[in-house]
Image (tube, rainbow, N blue to C red; front, side, top):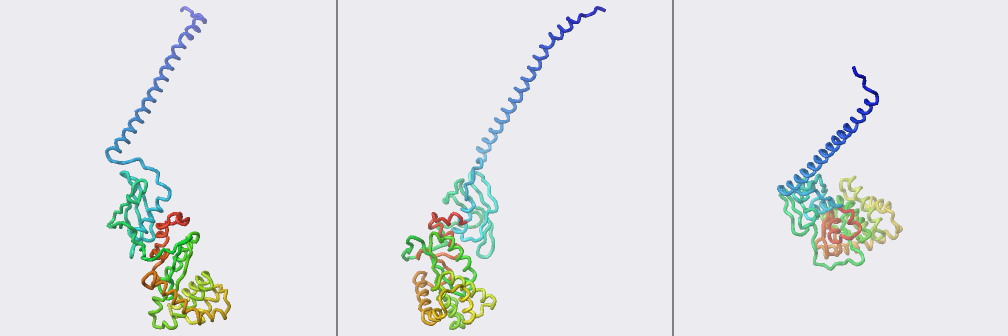
Length: 325
């Protein structure tokens, strides 16, 4: 056998090496081209499918829901539909509109319905599905034929009857809602007796209203504390008419600034006149003596539970309206 020289073997190996490198390069480049082609196909196909879906079904890419959108939905359900305890349970964007699933308390039970609106939540686009008609203007307040008494600040008038179940139920809530607008409105209390006047023991029941008038003369905080104390005692006594000893305890523990002599003078001489003035004002403004209503700026009549949304409907730039929902 002929022996192959070492130099010839090395030469052959060197000649073969470039051939292998070219093959590797070609193979690598082909692989990259295939991958790039597949990526392009996937993107083109995906874009086509999105375009096709939008064209055929009318679906749009989901826009960004603007900040505070759910608050606007709940305010709408309260202001225009008269619901309370409103909550948004779910939402989706479909066929160019937002769809909100809403749960809210009606007059007697909770109801579920859907509110639809355009992507910008324009009020004119609001639609309600679920056997609920939408009025053209909010039914939760009424504009009275009286002069507007708003000056630098709005005026919120609250009406209180110590023996009235409505007052007892909503006083804390109404007072707290009014306090939210303390930066933009002043709060005024009026003691009235639409319920007390019908009680069998009216002669004794009206004394609680006289105590409240004197508490109000002292300060709002004394009035509020005295009112809450009276409500607590009535709750403990099953709404039994309170005696003067119990009323003395309430007004004394409320932070009363006036001394005992001044209090007695108010109770004996001034309270009846103050009570009469509150009754006359209420009758003049509302056309009726009632505790069910809140009066805004002497002109807009609403119910306690809608006071905040009505106020923000009338004056949307008030600072407190950023938190109302």
